[in-house]
Amino acid sequence: MTAIPKRFRVAVEERADGKCEGCGRIAPLELHHRRFRSRGGKHTVSNLVALCGWGNHTGCHGKAHSADPPEGWAISQYGKYDDELVPFQAVEGLVWLTADGRRVLVGDTPF
Image (cartoon, rainbow, N blue to C red; front, side):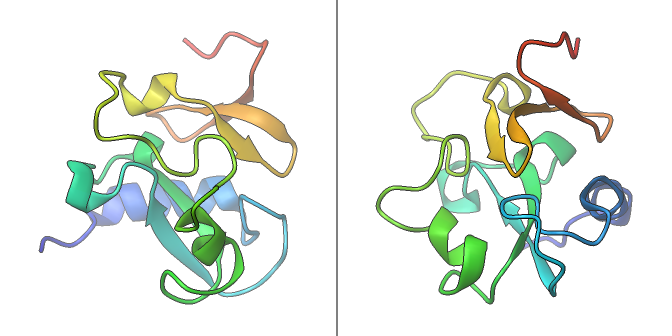
């Protein structure tokens, strides 16, 4: 298993600004692959979110691995979409996660 490149980790952590991107809580954060690595997910800024919780079990990280995660927290392996084109349900609403490390509300043009 390869490590997440530092530049991507830093971009996601800066985007999160110390808060869980799912609930807004200030807590220890882990990076979560929206398209799971086991489903072909890559280490990209648009595929990674900073979530509270430990492992795949607690907090928003556990919710992302549940049977019914919020929109965009788990992306199907069968979708032929770029991760950037799958919106993510963030604390501020439905957002696009861009390759350059921004969260843009759906309805605004990120590209």
